[in-house]
Amino acid sequence: MPRHRPWSLALVFCFALLMSCRQAPKPTKALNPNAPVDLRITEEPFEAQAALSRRMSILTAYLQRTTGLNVRYVPSINYVHSYALLERGEVDLVFVGIYGGHRLLDALPNAIPLVVQKPSYRLVMLGRRRWTEELAAGSTPSLDLVQGRRVGFGSRFSGSTFLQPLLAMQEEGLNPSSIEHCLHEPIQKHLPAHVADGLLDFVFVPSFNGQDDQFIPESLRDELAVVWVGTPRRNDYLVTTDNPEDPSRQDSLRKVQNAFLAMHPSDTQGRQLLESWGYSGWELPTPEFPGAVNQRIDVLLSRPGQLPSCEAA
Image 1 (cartoon, rainbow, N blue to C red):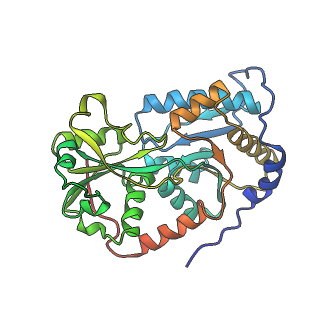
Image 2: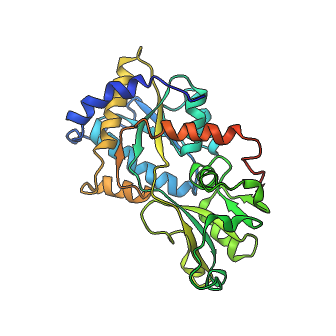
Image 3: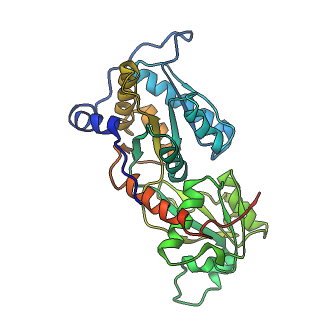
């Protein structure tokens, strides 16, 4: 049955933010490095730690400047660890895709989405360029090409590169069991190499900036090509926990929510952050996202055989 969650914090924030909170607060002076930490934030480790740390250093500086809060980044070991940090109260905020968000909103009664990415995510399937050039003239590649093939996904907990492909297959009436063999590669940028090496026929990667071939490295552009691209949608959002009994924390979360909504390319740090994610900006959650998407995930997970059993890279 569909779940109905009273996302009280998001509802309280909504109208006030839409009417008056989209402008970022005035810049503040640098905080004392020994100042108490106000909020802690983490992210699903979908890429190398060095890249995550660079982006998070920009983000925490941006949040400090726009909110006056001391926000600290807490690295996570893997996807499950990033969720456990929020579940144990060791972080206040976590960036998730649709799979991690579904898990947290289902597991924690007081978990709520704080902000969601503006629609910019597209699912991309890559394959060998020679194979695509050999397609019959006028034929249009589709998702049913994965049937009987070797397919690569991201982490088994990834929304953008595992659950989104399964939802797309669900929409096309395809059963994941029709895939001959599959593999999980937690570091998404490593997926194209598995096709070039002959280990896989197709891999799923995300595109957040409209550049469908962004995951194909220069060294492999003669070998790999974009085979299929999905329609633009959302995938990522920021999850926190609602605690009305702590007004100070609630106020801090409102400031962070406001800072994300105000993030704009005209601001240097805002532009760096949006480009690093590939987003066009952030918005408030809606009944359609993540609410309706989570209902679709419930249906997918309730059907036997809908999650393929894949090897780890």
